[in-house]
Image 1 (cartoon, each protein chain N blue to C red):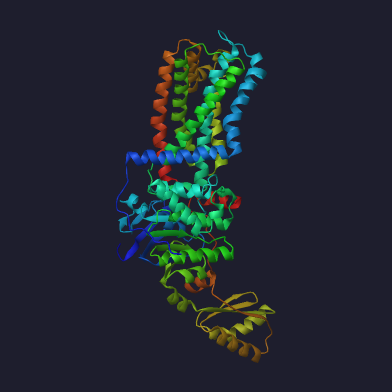
Image 2: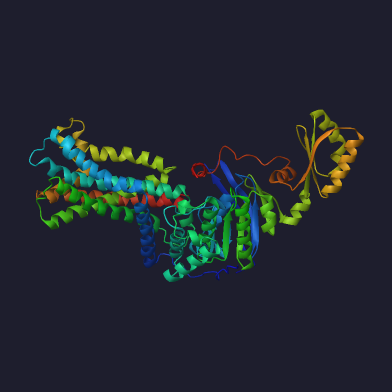
Length: 268
Length: 334
């Protein structure tokens, strides 16, 4: 058995857009395959959000009064936003695992596009979020959710939350690359995710919270996204919060993506 | 390609803001088409060297070319000409063996049909055809290493970096991997191999450097090093330490190298094992000292270090390069 090496390669694929896209898709495909092959990942991504819907609809819902809407109509847009943001934990865990297993090292020694590992990860996590949004929409309708706006507005709302979650996930890419292992990545991600999603208007109205918490809960980005999504889905005014949510998205990705990329360069 | 596939000059790599020097002015030249061995214990800087040459880690000082390309300035051209198989088989557990190889092929920018064909060829050559469509997480340790090596070969790189390819493998898997490496070199591939095993370096590598605490402490061909070290270790055990001390005075002159005494055991590094053993037995017998055991064996890495440095190969220092902890976790899991 002889395995002949090729001649030394002198042509470079550096900075070629075609290869960047192709490499990103290769990595995204690999991440999606893994998602469907790990039972715990499916439970984490698909089943947990459904449990949240049932929990708040049937257990806590009766104790929560909402001014101006039925609770299920208030809840489902919020849960959708919460679920897409929770997906970022998967971004952190996935990258921490790749690093821990030496895969990032292998990727860094390949002539592939530098951005593809992070781009493919965040793209795969966004595609997973699309699936989750579809599932929660149907589960929500099954438990009584009735969107009041147009279909176009509903799709705009979904797009908005997916864009925001995508931008935020770059911060969790940084967390995953900075953590020594996937367990720590998860432990680091939760204390960031929890205040963002629970000290917000996702499950309850901010007016019922203590005075000191209200300014944060009302103005933090997740509440702005939930406000905009709710407005679009329920046919209520939303322009103001939509623009704020988009501004947050751009601001977050502008800061977090360079952080994650710089961390990736140093990683492994 | 020039005469040397890899040329590294005065490579320095520090960690922890300069407080730890993992590599301290290491220079080496790997001739094209040969196996070059980087021998050293844990923590000596072998892995750091491979990471720097494969562009995964940056160097603090120094310069290097791989396949004629500058590691700092032309890293993308270096990457297009190397294959890297690391110490902890970097395969994706959630992909099949075939999917792992195809993915690496595509990321090497090989056309899809070629990547598929090449993946199947390598699975066949490495005895993994039957397991091609099984998830890599079901593979044994030896199979993972072979898959990892196959992944490094998908793009048929002219230069291969192998970081402790056989550490932790059973003897049969080690033999298999050695056979694969030898056939690669017959085909013209240049291999830079790191190892903790003198036997492995001796079998595969034409030229060697020995690293200790980030510095080169010896270099040469394997036979040059062996003649410096002595070919054989004569190990004699006694009933008591006082017997061993008495015997030491009698037999120390058999070897030109200092004897290593540990409790009741004396070890001498000698060139002609049987003659030295006979000589030692005569002297001990004449003094009527009782011995409890006698053994001739190949020198181990410890013997190499004892001879080169006067101290034994140390355990890794408490301060190691970052990432070691991460890998240690990984190892304990697998």
